[in-house]
Each structure stands twice: as structure tokens, then as C-alpha cells.
Image (cartoon, rainbow, N blue to C red):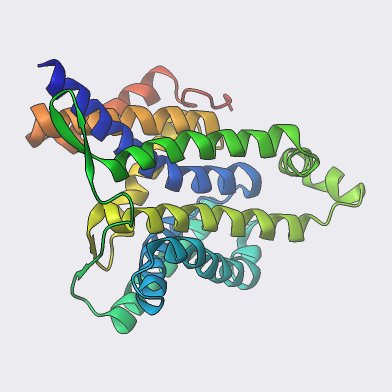
Length: 289
């Protein structure tokens, strides 16, 4: 029994870290720009496909794909923010959601045009294709790698936002755009940089998912963006530490639900979200409005 629980916990942690990688970019963009980017799941999907494209071009080298793929998607994010999203910052939330949802449909069709509508098999990550023995059962080494990457990213984001001059400028601009602009901060340029960085985070999650999923499919971003939104709501919109905690909770709940209550897997997630909204509508670390 202990063996089963430990392995389910590890599976939940690895799943939660993938959700966190996507939710971190979604949360950062909303916290600074005030935009709920429904297309963030599509950047996750593009990160996976671009990573696959690069690794195939460079001879099945996954690490080069993981390095260059998200950078390519970040360039796409720059174009989206610079020429489209910037025009809806001052509009109501429904306009933002409609625009970003349009990009979901656009990117899904572009993936089908360039890579086809069929699923694509992907290779394992070099050096992490094996499994290790934990309590008498084997657990994938790559999943342990992902479990380690998630907290390191969280620590890096905390250090960036709390301990650097750039982080202070970002926090000041998100709190009072007019005052930051009056003090000489180029707020539009800063917002573009934050959106591009958030896009890179989502694409990094997609690149890391390439060996984990084993298959790439058009529309693969829809499921992860739903989970990322749930995490953002539970943790508190705009709160990175809330998103990290929410991702852990959702990952573990999903793993235990899949193992012991497979019929009610997604149902448990939404029951948790409903309970949090009833008990604390602003989420774990969100501010009451």
C-alpha cells in the first residue's frame, strides 16, 4: 500500500509541475498585464511542436529542441502582443477572451496545416529514458527531472520578482501604470517583455512535455489551459505562489483520482475549485476585491 501511495504521489507531483509551468506564465501575464490569455495553452502546444521540429532537424537532439523551441514560440508571442493584444488592454474582459480564443482556433489550424492532423510520436529525452527503482517499483527518471525543474523555476521567478531591480519595476508597473510611466518606465515595452517571457514559460512546459506525453496532437493545449485556469483561480488570480500551490494540489488530486476514482477524475478537480470559490472567492493567495 505504501509503495502504491508513494508512486501515485510522485506521478501527481510530476503532473502538477507540468500544470505549474503553464500556469506560471498565465498567472504572470494576468498579474502584470491584467489579461486572461486563453491562447496560453496554444503556446504550450506550439512549444511542443517547435521543440519536436528542432530536435528532428538537429538529429533527434531533444535538449537543443528544448532550448530553441520555446524561443521560437516567444517570437510568436511578441507578434501577438505587439500587434493584437496591446489594442485590448483597456477593454472589458470579454473582448480579451474573444481575441485570445480566436488565436486558439488559428493556432490549431496552423498546426494541422504544417504538421498534419494525425498524432506524432516523439522520442525520449537522452539520458533520462530509463527508470529508477523506488520502493520496489520503477519510476520514470524523466518524471523525477520534471519534479525537480518545477520548484527551481518557482525559486527563479521569486528571485527575479522580489530580489532584482527589474522585478521591482515590474511590480510597480503592475500596481500603478500611470505612476510608473511618469517616472520614466516604458510601460508598453515592459508589458511586451513580460508577455514574451510568459509565453516562453508556457512553451517551455510544452517542450518538456514532448518526452513525457510521447504523442503530439493538434489541440493538445485545450486540456492543459483548463487545468491552468483552475490552478490560477484556486491559487488566486495573479499570485505565483498560489499557482504553485494550486498546481501541486490539482496534480495530486488528479493522480489519486485516476488511481482510486477514475470515473470522477475531472469531477474532483471542479468540486475542489467550487469549494475554494465558496470558501474564499479570491483564492488561496488572491486579494479580495
